[in-house]
Image 1: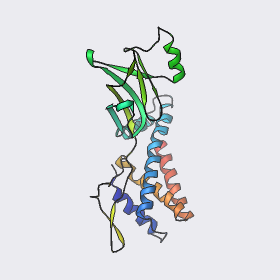
Image 2: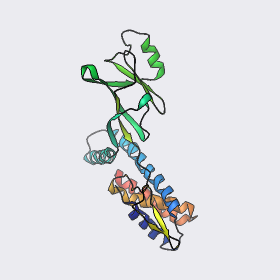
Image 3: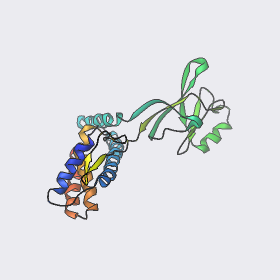
Image 4: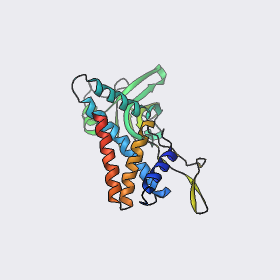
Length: 233
C-alpha cells in the first residue's frame, strides 16, 4: 500500500516548486487512478517479456520474482461466483474456475472453451463435458459451467483483482482543501510500497498536460522512462 496523502503532497510540492500551477484534489484523484492502472497493467506486460527471455539469468529471475510479488497482492482465491454465475465486479484477469461436487466431497477444475469448441464437443461422446471433465464459457460479466448439465451452484474462481480506485478525501476549511483520512470513501493506493516514486512521476506527467506545461511533462516523462529502463537492465 502507498499512502495517498504522501503522494499528493509530494506532487503538489514538485508541481508548485516553480509556480507551475495548482493541482486540485479532483484532478489529482483522476490522475492517481490513471497512474495506478498504468503501472498495474505494466506488470503483466513486463512479466510476459521477462518470462520469454531464454536461459537462467539471475537478474531476470529477480525481476520475475519482484513482479510476481507485486501481482500477488491482487490474487483472490476460492471466491464464490455469484448467482447466475456472475463474475466478481473487480475482476481483472480470471485464472482458474472450480466446481465442488458436494455429494462426493470433490473439487474439479473447469476448463475454458470458446463457444465453437463447446458446440463441437457437445456432439462427440468421447469429449462431451461431464461432471469429471467440466468446461466453461464466458462473456464480459458471467461464465456458464457445464458438466453433465449446467452448474449454477458451488462454483468458485481464482482471479487477479483490479486495484481499488484511489481517493484523496478532504474537507474545505477557509476555502482550502484539508486532508480527511476518516471519510468513508477514502482510499490509499493498492500498489506495492516501492511504487511511490513511480506514482509521483506518472501523476506529474499527467498534470503537465493539464497545466499546459510542456517542460514539466517532459521532465516527468523522462524520469518515468529512465526508471523503466533501469528496472529492465
